[in-house]
Length: 236
Ligand code: MN3
Image (cartoon, rainbow, N blue to C red; front, side):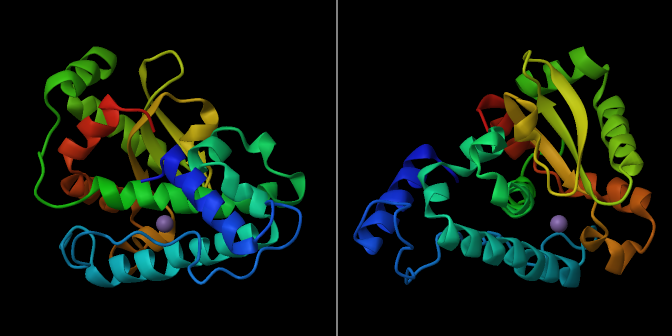
């Protein structure tokens, strides 16, 4: 979804549109915004009854949409940002000018996190892990049930807003981590992000209100383990 090639292409397009080198002057307003909310690829109602249609609609169109709108505003002011891919920027936020580092962390992070999240949940895939991923889960956690318990605990103990993740850490081992706000696991130097769950209240409040544990328990029914296996097999 965010390949280096895409980033370069986009940067080149922005440069051509501006008719000059990136960063020297503000580019002309592009006809097409650089960042877009990716289509879900399935219906807003496809994850019923686990995630309700209204939540999916508002979450995807408005919440994710707001991160993307803010991000496009940032890139308009700082066109050099477009020279790097989202993964490159989020993996090393020190390369982002300090004046916009926090908004980039929040809005590019929000864009990356949500794009990852939607792509993890298309209906119809495997309902449980198998193959290499299953072996790695058993080796690291003992069982899939132990893994889900650990992810749920990470999500429940995240005070306020954030995410819980299953990652392949910098040493190549599976690990469960949590990030606050829209921080991504990429800045932890992980090799791969296998799965993740949004525990912001906006992800569940309409249906589950304050019962984050009930949301997390239901959420596992939406995980497409074929997607998780593909994430496990390739870098973020
Ligand atoms: Mn969210």
